[in-house]
Structures are given as C-alpha cells and as structure tokens.
Amino acid sequence: MSKPLEGVRVIDMSHVIAGPLASLYLAQFGAEVIKIEPPQSGEVMRASKAAPEEGDTPAGFAALNAGKRSFAADIRTAEGAALVRSLARTADVFIENFRPGVVAKYGLDYAAIQAERPDIVYCSISGYGQEGEWSRRGAYDHVVQALTGMMMMSGDSAEAPPLKVGFPVIDVAVGMLGALSIVAALHRREREGLGQYIDASMVQASLMLMYPNASSFLTGRVEPQRVGNRGYTGSPTADTYRCADGWLATAANTPAQFRKLTAVLALEPLCDDAAALDLEAFHAPGGGFVVARDLPYLQQRFRDAFASRSAVEMEQRLNAVGVPAARVRKLGEFLDEMESRGGAALQPVAFAQGASTVRTPGLGFRYRFDGAAAATGAPRLGQDTHALLAELGWGAEAIRSLCDARAIRLYPPIQQGAL
Image (cartoon, rainbow, N blue to C red; front, side, top):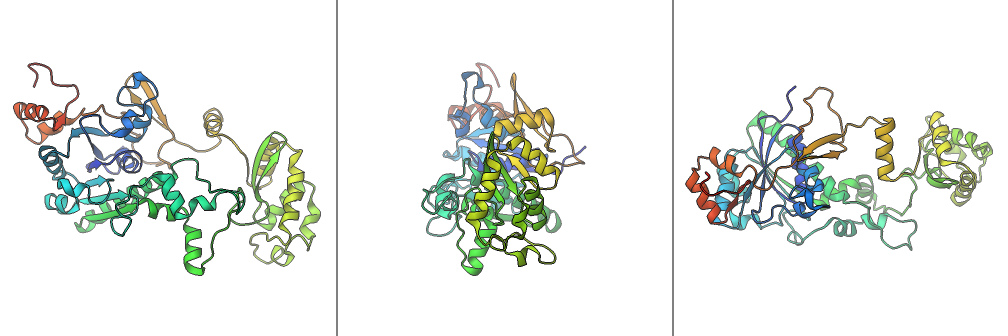
C-alpha cells in the first residue's frame, strides 16, 4: 500500500531531537528526507553511542533518523551552502532548528530558499520563536520548563523545590507540532499552490502541553497550584496511593466512580458524609466531578485504606468495576509487559541498523490502511552525498574537487582512482 507523503522531498537541516523528530514523522509517512549534516563529524547525536561498535549511527541517533538520507555538506563554505540551495530547488519542505539569524548568514533562510523554490514549506524550530527580545537566546528543554512555569507546576507542595519533567518533553512536543504544521501546510499547498513559513518554538510547545492551565490563567488569571500526583480534575480520589507492594494511581473522578471505589474499599459511608463531600454536587443531575469539603480527611481515609492492600490486586479489581487505576511502573517494566501480554494496542517499529536492530515504540498512533513502516535504519554520515550530487548533475572531477575543498563528505570515502 502507498504511504501518504510519497513523492514529497524534505531538506532537513536540523539536529538533536526536535527537528529530527519532525522529519522522522515525514519520513515514516513516505517522504524522502535528506538530512544535511556537517561533514567533519555529522550531527551531534551521532556521538551519543553506548558502544564502539555502533560506529557513527548509534541507536539513539538511528531512532530519530531512520529512513532518511545523509548529505554531508559544510554550509559554512560557499560551495556547501550553494549545494543545499540546489537541493532546495527540488524540495517541497525545508526544516531548520538553528538560532534565529544563523542560517541567514549562509543564504539558507526562508527568503533565500523561497527565491529558489517559491512554494516551499519552510519550518523554523527554535527555543523562543523568530521574533522578540529573547529570540536569539539558546534553549534547552529543562531551561524552557523553568521559564514557562512547568517546573513550578510539578512537585508536592508550594514549599518544594521546582521539579522538571523527567524526560525532554518539550523537545518531543515541538517536533510533533512541527510535523503537524508541515503536513497541514502541504495540504493547503496542494489545494491552492501556496507555500508557507512556519515558526515553531519550544515556548509555544510548552504552553500547548499546559494548554488548559495556560488558558485558565489568560482568561481568569487563575494560577495553577501544585497538586503533586493528584489528577487534573481535583476530585479527591484522583490521586496516587502507597500500597503494601508499591504505588497505585486512581481516577475516581465522578460520583459513580467514587461510589464504586468506596464499595471496593468498604468506605461506603463517605458517600453520605456531608462534612467530607459537597453532597449537592455529588447528587447533582447529570453528574460532574466529586468535590471535597474536607480534603485532608478524605485523603487520609483513602491512604489508610490502600496502605494494607496490594497495588496489583487493586488495579485488577478497580478496573473490573469501571474505576480507572494503574499500578505505578517503570518505563521498562511497562514496555516488557506490553510485549509479553499486549495489554494496550501499541504498534512498535523496528529498524535494521547494520548487524543490529533498533526498536522503537512507533509514531504514537496507528493507520489501519497504510503501507508498512520503513524498515531501513539511519544512514551513515555522507552515505547519499554522491548519489544526490550526481542527480544534480555533478561529474566525478567536480565531486572530487568538493571533497578536496572539504565542502562535502562521501561515504564510503573516495578511494584512489575511484569516481
């Protein structure tokens, strides 16, 4: 079966996580993604190898760059930048994630690329956006978490120190938003023939991850409070409890769910306790969320009830009666469990990378009617440079001269008498 972006060519001049993740989506949707890399050592993630045998395509790099082609050209040289512009004439999409102003120095900004390809869909990914006082600041995930309030929303109490999310959540989010915006722009271009310039930033992605909270503040100046491991709804039993054999998260948000939870724990009298619950809200027609009158009291009753029970058993019993609940697991534990038992409908993707296999959780959703995921792994640095130059009309001697000038890199390297 065909894939949705077959026939689309993407020039990807990005690095690390955000930009490469955006173009990974496009590659797995069937687009031809040409990754522009520095010829000296390649993209920085190529150095993130855990073992020497991984060479220049370690698993972390391969997971983000599978199915792409590598064009190794030094954009700091006039020759290298000109080559990228030549490729841009043949492309539909151009992605970069340098600080604002950097690519313009080499004639690779939106205006320059649009001059080569007027209907180009050009996506710039940055920390703070392309405009504003902070636009030229460097940005890393945890720094943006600090800036945007995300760190202050995490933690158990107002007195606790700021706490970051334990993985680069903003990098991943801006990559997803970049892919989404590019696909939408391609659809519009197909319909109207118009290109697009996309300004995607980590700051914007962070606010989208906190969208309900940010909207509440912008509308009514409601500052979010730290709730620790409690759920977003604020219901007293949308919480996480220590059990005899671990931790359990529950989400008894509605009165119906609350009744079922109290029945399992033999706490049914709480459903009629006007001192503990807002009974008017609890019995309101049409339901809603459970509202506590005495939250500390309710919290202690449920903590005591769970303390002597098994999290494994409670997960089974509560889900069986319609109360969402999950024992707290490590990531690896969850992935192993899904592989052995298939409890959730996941669609992992594996890529052949030399003699090994790089396994990934997939793209986050499933297409029922689509071609299979691309099985090829990430390219070696400069693996496709020669083929792409030949496509652009460069002859053997001209390619050799580019190599001699260190404007490009080929893989495998030129041998004596080759080309």
